[in-house]
Amino acid sequence: MKKNFTFIANWKMYLNFNEEIDLATSEYDNYIKLAKNTNSEIIICPSFLSLSNITQIFKTTEIETGAQNCSEHLKGSFTSQVSAESLNLIGSKFCIIGHSESRKYLHENENQIIGKLDMLIDNKISPILCIGENQEEHKKNETLKKLELQLKKLEESISNNANIREYIPIYIAYEPLWSIGTGNIPTQQHLENVFTWLFEKTQNINNNVEFKILYGGSVNAENTNFLKKIKHLDGFLIGKSSLDFQEFEKIVRLGSLS
Ligand code: PGA
Image (cartoon, rainbow, N blue to C red; front, top):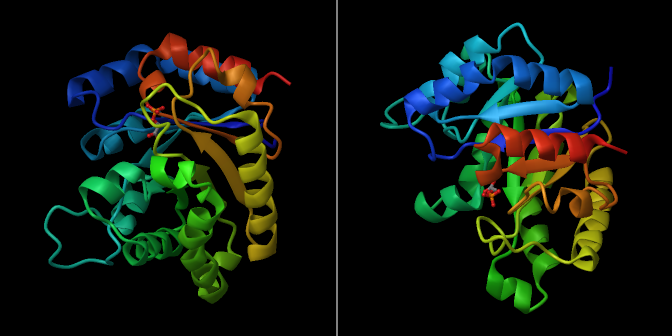
């Protein structure tokens, strides 16, 4: 059955290994019930270290897992990196790429990010590509210009990638940098403009690919009702508010109500 809405929990590096395993095991039944009762797609993205364990924990359930990054290389002398092939082997079906925190702290550029996307597609993992403008670009009204730039390589890559014909949905998460972790969210007008533009853009990229467009940046139980009304929105990428199961549950319940 087609899922209602997608909720991606990005645990970032907020929890240590024990806390991540505790959260997954103590709320195991509740996560499963939540996904079933709301017919939602729930994807948990823990740190690399616990990803394999958490994928095993939820193996026979509807809860999916995703990595928070991967290498743009196939294999080789790339100390500290994790390949898309390994993610596939442990059974993780999603991977966040191009998150603004990775772009900033790991100095990732557009070529690397698209390299990661190609690796993921080759390994049948759905990329969750994060894009978004910074505060200055936002003030100058340059959001769409920035998104256009960030999606340019995606368009080229998808038209050249033969494996894309296989069914791998691509997720695009619009995450304005000035909204992540700040409690500030965009106005309705801004979101309507961005999501209408993103919808049209993805419709024109490649007919064989299913795109899902998500919003991320300070999503919480208070603003879910407002955010979920945005036309063409397929779900949320949730950071801080995904760490507290009760808060996450509220967001999923409110977000999946029509
Ligand atoms: P936030 O993070 O919900 O804590 O703002 C979202 C993200 O960075 O993916």
